[in-house]
Image (tube, rainbow, N blue to C red; front, side, top):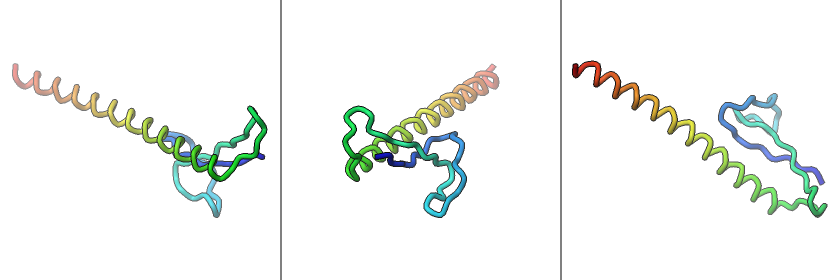
Length: 84
């Protein structure tokens, strides 16, 4: 069974809009059970969806933290410039 889940990945190229999928910045990723060939259940899809959402949040948090560090460094440089 081949299923499809949708994942929000910051900075990813969005898929073309469709009636069932209109959220900006999301892509579809095919999922297949190649390891044991058991059918993929709704519970499996729910788990995969939760995992993918958590991974997307972790990526987004890392990007935001990096941006915060860059702005903080710029602020420190500006403060040291004006304290001379």
